[in-house]
Each structure stands twice: as C-alpha cells, then as structure tokens.
Image (cartoon, rainbow over the protein chains, first blue to last red):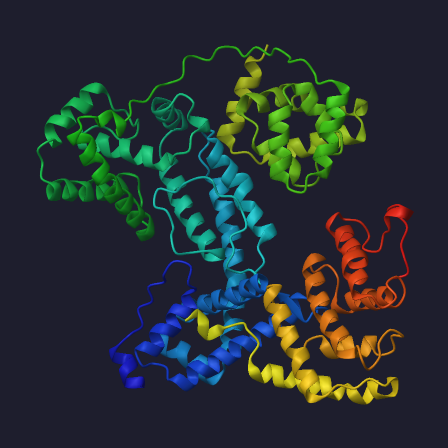
Length: 451
Length: 160
C-alpha cells in the first residue's frame, strides 16, 4: 500500500456541500489506500466522537438533540478533520494518523489549526481595513467594516466550524467557491487585500471618477470596484496610454475597436496575458499570488471584452471617468423632527431588536433628521460595537454634519452634555479616528463647506 | 458516503438500553412495578419511534431508565398501567423536548413531568400533554419563566 501511495495520489475534488474529509475518505477507499476495516473503524470513531461533542454541546444535560443539530456537529467534525488534512498536506501521513491515532487525533490537529487560521484571518482583516478603498461604496464598506468583523464574534469553531456566520455583500472579482467557514473567510480576505492593493495604486479621485462614470449612483450599486479599475487599466495599456489616470475616451474606444475587432481569439488572449504582466510590473506587484490574481482577472475580462467588441459596445467595458463638479458648498436644511410618540415607539422597538443589522435597518428607514439621530444615540438603544456599526453606514455628508456639529471644536462643550451624549460622542470620535486618512480628509472638506 | 455515518441508533445501542431498563427492576420492585424483557424491548422501540418522529437523535442508553426511576413512586402508577404509561411518557418527553426548544435539561423536564403528573393532572397523561406541558412550552417560546401561570400573572410560578 505504501508503494501504491507513492505512485498514485488522492486528488480531492470536493463536490458541492460534501465535506472535504468525506471526499478524501471516499477517494482513499476507492483507490485502495484504505481498506474496509479501517473505513469501518473510522465510521465508528466518528459516531463516538459525535456523541462526545454532543455531550459537550448540551453540557451533559441532554442525552438527545435534534437530528439537524447532530448533523451540523458531525459536519463540523468532518470540516475540522478536512482542515487537518490540508494542514498535514500529505496523503500518506494523513492516512497514517487516521490508522494509528484515529479520527479524534486528526480532529484535534484540525481544531488547533482552525484557531491559527482565525488569528491570521483577524490580521488579514486589519490589513484589508487599513488598505480599504477610500471612495465610499455601500456594499464594500458595509462588508469590510461591519459584515466581516461579525464573523469573529459569531464563529463557533467547536460546533459549527463549517459555517460562515457573517454578511458579505461585496462580490469579489474572482468568486470563491467550494469553501466555507474560516477557510472561506481567509480566502475572501486574501483576495480582497489584493484587490485593495491594486486599486490603491490609483488616486482616489481617479477611482471615484471611474465609478461615477460607470453609474452616477455608484455607492448603492452592487459591483466589484477592482473589475472596473483593471478593465480601464487594461484599456489604457491596449491603447498605449498612461495607466494611472485610468482615462478612456471615445477616441480611445474607436481606436481599440478598429485595432481589436478582427483579431483572433488566441491572439487577444496572448495580448491580455502580456498586458497582465506589464500591469503588474508597472504597479510593482512582485508577489506571485498578486500576479496570479491579476492574470486570472484578465482572463475573466477576455470574453467580456470580445463580446463588447463584437457588439461594438466597448463603452460597456471601458468606462469614461466622470470627474466631480467643483465642490459646491453643502447646505444643511434640517428635516422636521419625529413626533414624541413615534420616537418613543421607535426606541422601544430598537431596544427589543436582537441583531444590530435590524436596528440599523430600522434607523435608516425611520430616522430622517439629524436631531432625531442624535437623540436616538443618547436614548440607550445602542450598545458597545453597535455604535460603530451604525456610524459605518453613514455617508460622507452625514459624517460631515456630525463632524461639524459634534466633533470639531468640541473642547469646552462637554460640560453641557449628559452622560449618554458624552458616551456616543466618545464612540463617534473613536470611530472617526479609525477612518482611513483619505476619507477623513473628504469628510473634513465637506464639513468645512457646510453652511 | 453519508449513509455510512448514519445517525439512527444501532442495534447494539438498543440492546444496551434494554439491559439498562431491566436493571431498573431491582429498584422498582418494592413499588410493585417490574418490566419483562418484551416490555423493555417495546419501550426501546417506542423511544426509537419517538426519536424519529420528533427528528431527534440520542446517544448512550437514553432517558428511559431515568424516567422509570423518576416515576417509580408515583401514586398513579400500578402494575396494570405501568408499561402503557411509560410508553406515553416517553413519547411525551421527546415531543416536549422539541416544543420547549431544548431550553430545559432532561432532568428539569422529567422533574416537571413528574410533579404535574402526580399533582395537577392526577395521573392523566392527556392533561399532562395538553394542558401543563403545553403551557410550559408556550411560556418558554414567549420568553416567560417556564413555570409561570396565566392566572397568577407572569411572576406567579407553580410547584414545578
């Protein structure tokens, strides 16, 4: 068997929904790396381990659980064992561990590896937040500053390791499939970090102009920012222009239509591969993973570009940036405050909300004036991280108003504030200090034009 | 592959449960209550059926022996209704584990069942199911104290 292991290897193609560990076992059995006796032994061990985990789950207070819960815990065991297989990264060694030490040993290896991965995911999240694109995009900022951090509060590595309990709305350029749990989060964050680093090579003004050129109301749309940036960067290189301004004009599109219309598919593919390489060199992307990601994104762009050329609609792929009109002073017109009764009902409802997302949705739907929002913040409806979650969904203009009214020149005003008002203003200040420098500059700029 | 890791209790587990149930005879004999091998098998089958119909899975010997020992001194249990009552109580137990959202431990639910059975229901399994445990489960679902009674307000709690 050891000889056959050297000549054959288990190639695990994890099918949808089936844990990696199960697919591995199936392949190991079919390819003769594991005999029926060992397979049966592991099955028995899995039931014994499940019984142990269930006892731990119920604190020994219940001898039975719902089948759905037991299946979830069993799935968690298999997921953890699968993570251990990834960690061991050697079929022969993995089977030796299973044969000699049993499934529980594999589970223990996987469990500690999950802890390591959670720590590395936290570090990745910090890097992602630090390198976040400054241009405000709702799905992006909501995911980076609110959705992804939820994972670390809600993830249950003991009984639901395969779950991904957070809301991720922002689509990646190269979506991640076949992964769940902490593996998914790590892969998502690694990809997002590459996208961030790519986008940050271009100025915020240029990226914002590009997004505005794509859609006037870009902040509320679901799309991938990196996709737009890389498409225009590719267009600039194809048109033999400077990449950094991301500027594509009608004339550029006409030129590219003429140049690329009749080009062979393979020739265009080669050209795109070359463009990916040049782009990485130009932007100082030395890292292999980053170069690979850019190359993949370019290959994904290829059929879209070809279709656009065939349809003579290059403007759907290569966008003309639209720069913002010179800053107009912002004018603050206070909206009418809510009726007392409606306000009381809202605060009661907010206090009974279990999830912060529900609270935020409720506030966004019902609170229309800045005064009401300030009153609400001081009404004891939000706790701990919920303040940050709310602040993270505020738009630049709203933050500018807060900055103007509460943060700027706050010295000396504190004595007039109640304890609750001091609390939310402290939270706001700490949230504001954690914002990227570019966004702070933008907010302060807007605040200075407020009249 | 999934069927290889089936969660349905295996024959070995059932056999173990029969042995545990028969082991209780020693402790229940002084109350005039004993079970035959066939009775024990019937109770284990009832448990299997109740688990399946309530979508639950159990590890180890389960709760039948605990239930027998808890109810052995009930004034409403006697030789003629012993097996049938245990049968009904087993089904009731798993049904209300679900209905109470698994908020009550096995011991707490058994304690409540015994208290209601002996006092409020005077040995009636129907009253136990349809009145007392139904109210207990509803209280849990609505976030009240499990033993709150409507006529005494939210604060009022009964003996259980």
